[in-house]
Image (cartoon, rainbow, N blue to C red; front, side):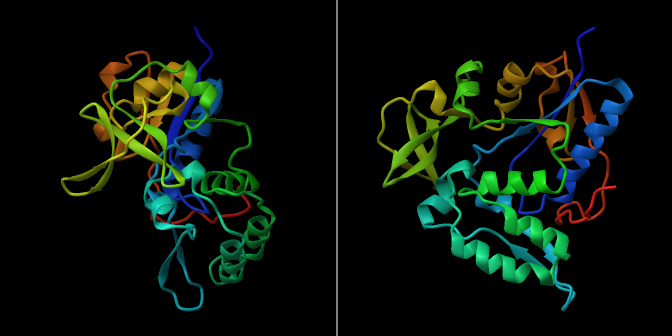
Length: 258
């Protein structure tokens, strides 16, 4: 029998991870205790949706739920650059550090202040590491050019291409590369066919692409994710729904971990 490889996937999802991501960590580690093997976090940091990094927290003074996010340097980067290239400014970090005591305890504020990262993905990843979530977990990033070279080729994909002084994530469509402007509107980006190290999968091709890199035996899927995954594509994988957790979209701030 092969050594179990227990995988789960997620975009960077907030300065403090959303509770559903914590539930994936907890489910995978519980399964590891039962069957052994290694835990792999497939970090889909090629995604470009800035809403993925929204952090939802309760203000301790007002009792209201508030939404925090990175300040992005310009509109093009905010909307279309992949998360691993969305740059983080020092002023944003100073401003957020002043706000955080209204939402979390001093231990988490201290972890936040120690993080040194110049992009949204690395900032989230270092926060998760500081909180202890990544202990014993292998992180595989969809932005890694070496892994992209090793992955299978897919017909439906995005490509990281230069555009107006930034790198944007453009969709292959009708033989060209396009940015979605909303509704039926698309903007074509003039560029040459990108090399394989610039390509990442769409939602519908992500499972096979990821599996060609990770080779997992078990996959922990989210409540919504399990609805669209084509599990028949990978009969070698045992799919497990993540454990239920209350207030799943809010930030996980239970620290230290028990």
